[in-house]
Length: 361
Image 1 (cartoon, rainbow, N blue to C red):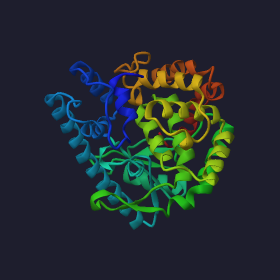
Image 2: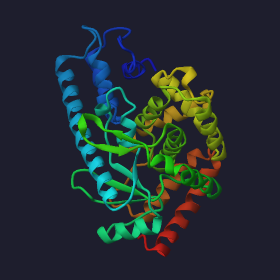
Image 3: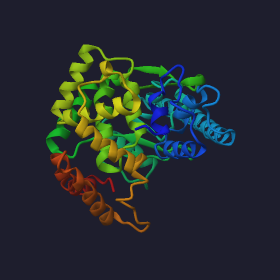
Image 4: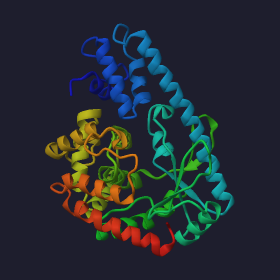
């Protein structure tokens, strides 16, 4: 934890950040490399820019970092315009919608334009069959999955339209999760916010919804590709303003029903250790042992697991190869998450048959 990279992360919210000592150029190079791996370049540049004179990186490296941050700002401006336009497009068809994660979560950050943007995850307020039929008519060649369909509405921003926000591999837990989404749906489709710089307006989830959904999202990354620090920083900023007692109790009740209390305690450890999230803001007491294990996984895998040396993807990998690779990869979680791990291959087989039955392939 004493590396420059972690020092900067722990001072992201400090009004006057300062390092323990001036860093060498090699340390700055390593910090920038880690920031790129974890897609935190823009957020960390805001901290670097506030460092006192004599503690900033060499001018060449600072300009390189600044240029990357400006590209992130430009990308966010584009994604914001597209998200607002897509929301209006669905509204014209009589469908309310909510933007999950992404641009909605970015609004929690001190500077929303510095969070690395991804694709647009849109959850429309429509029955699954009706929504799927509409999307299949517009994009006849696109495959669909249990929770979403990739829809090329734009040629410069990827879009995923969600039938449901997420899922669990365990059948009982998934039923409880889908009940939670249905119960909370109405409140999500009516919370409209303005995006930065007049880009337009969209609906984003409530904090009480995100306390559960974003934890499930982090958990999904653990089993599908790999968790990056960006997903965990999102949760840090979700917790930072503080939760009401009612929000906390409701979130812990749902996480318990989903069997995620232990995982949530590991996440709380990482938040406190890496981002210095205040103890009074944490959702529940941290678990150091589970948290250390989770942090090792995060630092090995990087964002979306792209840098994970244990699970290299082959260029010619087919569906069966990917199935075997992911199932083998997830065996390392069987000790801490036995139910979700052992149900992974069962869910994947069921999902394949379910897609064939419903014409989603």
